[in-house]
Image (cartoon, rainbow, N blue to C red; front, side, top):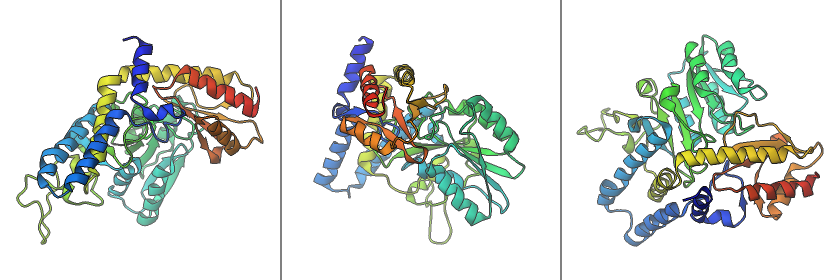
Length: 394
């Protein structure tokens, strides 16, 4: 099949992108038909038969969860036993932050690239445990300079660095392996917000040395909301304590795995960080989405297509002197640009929506953010450019 034929085949599987020009995958990606059908089938089964058949758990849900951990493991380049299923990125980051053996006076470190989902649990942990919160200023730096800042700024009490692999705020692709190496040299572990990277750039987490990596299902992986994954490096299992727990965290081989007198045997792998049940249709939908991406669309084609389209969009938008792109060359699927001074970003966003173009505004930065999904077309980028010319000038 030709590249254009493959693109059209992929687009045919995504109903939502035919409603409008879909340029906001950084918030939520479109659901592919296999995921929609898998979720609908599972939900209908629950409606028809109820949810009390224990054999469904043993024969369907739990095997699906195992296959889903394996699929996330392949995506991240790690072993499936190092994957815990979660509800989203924020859920995973909270697990990585709150499970640390904190001592008053330790430093928890964030950067000015972060989403509130990474910063808020760090702030609350600092308040609860008497930690010092340190913020690294990386937003205006070239990506290649970031490891040096990490090396220079971390101190002897720095215990955990929370950093995005791809920043939601400016789209930069952080040189993860080098940042991790710099942090580890200072005795500091690294927890990564993978919300804008998983499915948007190749991952090789085992090689990177990263300690914890949280991802969502609903963005670049085109899965349902309410499901994601947390990678916990094997060497950190004894270091990171589960912060809330339940039946799904138990070692099913232990007889009994718990009792009312203090016995508790946790799963021997990252499943110990899974506390309770996950919505069965979401598991089915996420598994179907990952299979669709891996088997039908193809990761190599996805990453190449997104890079070409991002750079096409960069070239077209850069031609308009009223727009100022500030996403650096090291990027993944996001492209951020400022509007002229005095132009109301909310009005421009509304004007684009009225023209059938869905994009993302970042209010506190007075900018717009474009997501170049692998299903998007050059013609859709052209339509955005033309609409912006009408709204802000050319």
